[in-house]
Image 1 (tube, rainbow, N blue to C red):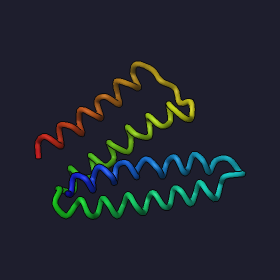
Image 2: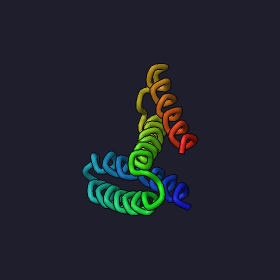
Image 3: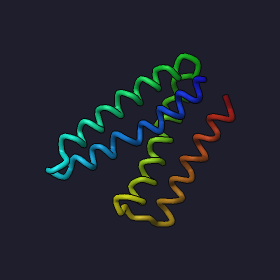
Amino acid sequence: MSWIYLLLAGVFEIGWPVGLKISQVPETRWIGIAIAVGFMAASGYLLWLAQKDIPIGTAYAVWTGIGGVGTFIVGAMFFGDALSLMRILGVLLIVAGVAALKFSS
């Protein structure tokens, strides 16, 4: 169950940078901040639950990896963030590192 909590925590981790991005527009500033704070709280709580059975170093690395890769994908798909071969390769290295942590525990 802890790995499910950690996966969900990583998915919620994507929400707070998206909320901060939404808050950059004056018309959506407060809703963006509310989204960011809500996703931060949910992500932190789920990470806390996951760390009951998963070592802190592994949990944190997987959590940030999921959040980073997910935010990269959302940024490219919805916010026009640049894609290049090197950026994609970097994200693939993060995915490989997260997979290595999962399979080594």
